[in-house]
Length: 361
Image (tube, rainbow, N blue to C red; front, side):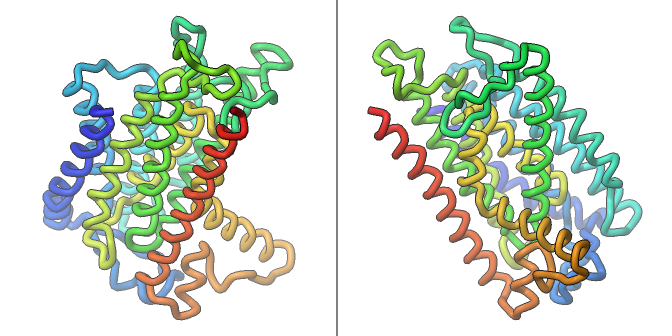
């Protein structure tokens, strides 16, 4: 457990103290945010605020994760290596998007096509590798079964191994793209996505610890209640580093934000969400724990569908947080209340997670 605490502490300290140095660097080179003209009028004052803060988040996560392992004499296992690769890979895609926005002085970066191509390249690599590297018990980081609290009976390999792998790659990439875009959509108000991400990752620290203590490889494990996850301790250490990095960055990202995470951060954090849910085998539970991200994404889907089908908008502006801005709510009020919703979703998910285990006794 010491590695989990150390990883979170190192990541938080790095994020907290490196971010202001990065802010000064970005300010000196005039690498600032460009704000969409059709957005809320109150956001126009944010034009020029340093962006690409996700670089610091990724830096803090990687060093925190490595530090937590090295300082406790551990060697990281393959599960956390895969998620770190996913985080860094999607961070590179986001960095390219942010760089185009800055160099071309516009609010749009990579085209949707190229962003999807980048996400797919990273996601396919992750998905294929996640089905490799079986341990001595034959357990791979991910499985072809759809998971809720653990793997369910719905296994994509039912139609054959090859078909199962193809279906898993499609399913995994859907989750990676959906979660990375969901965090990206949530990152519209100062501190909103950062705080919500910290809440999500903290919940997954607990999921990892619990699955470690109830692992099927333990000699005293009860088959009815144990969890078949390849490297739960590794994933808990990484989730702790993600939590710490988000909390440290939030100090500077809270309203009024001194820096934005940009697509560099939002795509990377979204990839971390997807990776953790896939490798802890809690894909559908993640939808509950990350309910705020899901709600905000659905608000965009409903808005677009309503306008295309009826010509009318359900919300004054999408995503959902901008709707409340148009209603006159203050930015801090919206962010704090949405954090409360994020906390409630995480609590609900963890309650379901624990209740299922108790009911299985």
